[in-house]
Length: 250
Image (cartoon, rainbow, N blue to C red):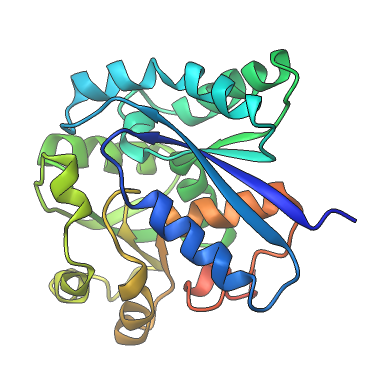
């Protein structure tokens, strides 16, 4: 029985968080389960979170999928939620299908999932209909993300745009500020809180506190991606300290 898995990530060149939070979660899982993981990345150029740079960056994802399939990874995650959502409604399905075909053609077939698709799927897994969303993006991109989520069948009751354009600055945002941001939102009648609709904005250290503070399940793009990866690998989606989605309840 297979015990070791290679995790591939397609990441923006300026992203520093997905290669921190996903290994942190899967390494924490190793304390309670026998499976072991190694982590491998390929990068797409992007510094400023603008629609133009995101579209140009997405064009590099095909090369990244090929490179990671050279390493015969077991699963690939496209680690940029807003790049996918800025390409039009439902684009996460188009991207996953196209990139998976590249791995097949290269003789290293592996499923490719996106953080965007993982997030909307995670809301379905926990049975959420109404949510609040926190993003680091400028307001126009935040509206695009909200519209994308709503197009997938959810109601976004409230959202916060932190308006950080520089992607390196997004990665430096202090997660300890997130509970205070959520406390100012209207979450009383929602089913879940999307604490970070962005794979670059650090959020993992704040998840347990926000769940305790609100009494609501909390998901983030990174947590949803980890859940989706474990499901693709047919492994139990459980990680200690990573919120309700990875608690083993689902």
